[in-house]
Length: 521
Image (cartoon, rainbow, N blue to C red; front, side, top):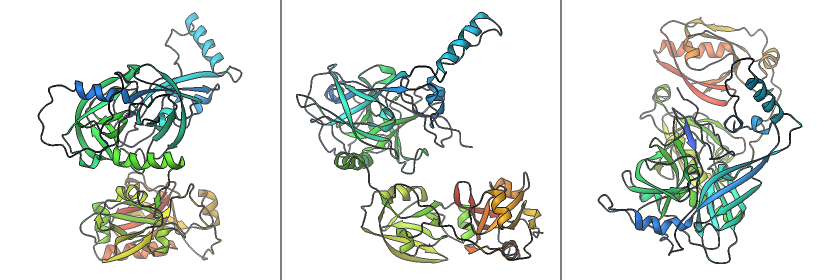
């Protein structure tokens, strides 16, 4: 079971992002620097050799600290805004009513106080937060996390020598949680450079520098614990995991290798308590570098786009497709007039390679986003037992998803509901009454699930009343009888499962559905 993951910034401008890790993940913000300006870190870093445990990190820390800054933000919040924040920040920011004996004077005093604070007529409040960042150019360009500076009315940066500068937002990217700031300085600023994060291995030493809990210029050390972590923060997750302590206030701070190159941007931690438990996550430098370059040039990010909705190929799905081994990205939908549609990709295809490199489902959005718009990529596609090489011209990721085209659909007469008692659900015709009852669009195709037995096979697979089955075994379903015939045919051939393409509140998904030994009734 997945529990909510929380990522917050330090201070009153906290940030809460929902993710799907088995536990609370927390994102942070952090701070300042210390030591006079020194020579910048090298732009690239060689592969780490076998080194023993360092005697000290002092020399390295002294060289890097001047380039790490404190990022302070202020925001004007009107009464009630924090409570309504779409990320749920309000519950972390607003003071909570203490537990006093019922009817006591203290209870009445605090109750009246809280009511005044939340009154629509209450004056706006100034909220502040602290985060971290690092200078990547002597001209004053600074990298931080987007959640550190989002919604801010004013952003200030404090250097290691306590110089305070007003920062201008150059650009931000919600999808990767990165932002670029610019400060004006009369003299060149100390800076650090991105290294090659792909060359850093599990077990390599790393340093994190930031502003945990508002304590500026704090250095912590650890190792890379894992690579390629997906914490369901977004579609492009590929985090470096480290045990270098990262706490509240570290968001936006750098993760350094032993050559002094930035190999990650500290963004989140896994924590049941809010403090470090040795599981932190950083955006790899090789991903961050391209995003920051685009923000610096244009103030926004352009990404490659295939125009497909995909899901991972599990063993159950592979069994349903007769696919061996179970790997790749199963196409659950193809955007009309998108690059994939023009390349003749179909729902039910399994994308196994991108430009000759084997891929897994969750990696496809990130890898395709990195491809330049207008270039031609080659997809290795498994389709009903055959492997195809499909060239596709990469498009630009749209700002908003296109609305599905709505077309009137004729309803066959004399259609009846069909119950699959052994499988735990019933389906009915997708007529006008069903569309109205379940709030389904006119262009929706398939058969609608009209009942789900609690504790049955359908319930266990997450099917709900109002979901629409559009395909079974990659064949379209238009009537309940179509579904019944195909399930019965699969049962007669002793198939263990079938694949249902289901449209629910979250969109299309493939559901590997086990078949019982009993006939559907």
